[in-house]
Image 1 (tube, rainbow, N blue to C red):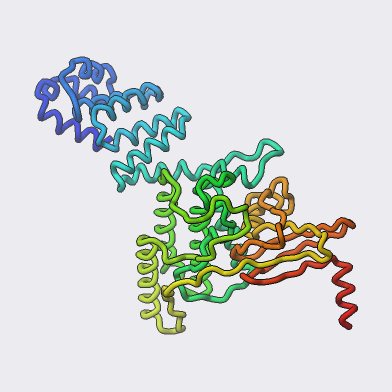
Image 2 (spheres, rainbow, N blue to C red; image 1 turned 180 degrees about the vertical axis):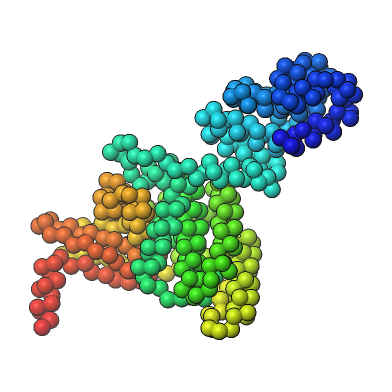
Length: 409
């Protein structure tokens, strides 16, 4: 309220009758009737009128009359639509009244007027991090959670990527630019706006989750102290989360919206990122190099930003033997995301990203897959696949595998 009181004090210089009377001080002290008298006097407009309405709205808010406060802040916005402060005030009352969607809309509008408004940004991040409700029906699925609240899947996505990266026992890489993006682990159809089964913000959160998880593992394995890089990562992460939250339209994409789910992906990886990404990577490299130069013993790995990434790779082919086996598969990211959500990853009714293999072609999705093959005679085979572009893999029925082994002896 400090800024609002200052506005009223300055405006008093242009309104002698208002400034010299007692109604101004009474209104500033939260006396609603004094604010009403000033409004009814009809002598004020623009910024002055907006300030008076806002003071009355604050009085309503203090009394717990949130809908009345919304009305007053709406009048303030009408009188002075250029001031983001009143949108933030109204957002608080919408939130208090349980109208979260309207609160979020006001906060986005406030940031559009004042991009550096920290209060609006913090409130948006807080509202966006509200987790989805615990499942109340047997119909709860991973996809339902992703569609309902993709922001709530950000922390589980980081946990999923951390588990996948650590399971691979990856070596230390020294490139801060990641050729693999998080969305590469999803299959392409989910990247297309309007594809239908995944909220379009979800791949954006997944991209960020992968980058943060990968950077943390890279820098930890390289033995750079967390104090050197964690503040940079945290700042970048919060800024990107806010950027995703305040987006009003999906990013442009050249992915084929008609492609079947999980059948292919563009394979291009990270083509270099946007200017903000490159600027962050430059800051990170500078901090790492400064620490490395100041601590020559033990000699730390020098990090770089690579020149680019490779292009498309052909899809992998997977066949069952005998050929009447039906192969089901799921990208390991979704498998781990189900686990992080407390959903049984092997249950396709809740972990519903499992897909049936079509024509032997499995998606060229980064990372691994979980799979299950079922044959008509009741035999089954389950496991994990590590697939690279162009691979040809045969999943043999257990008896067939034994016969093949005996025949080769």
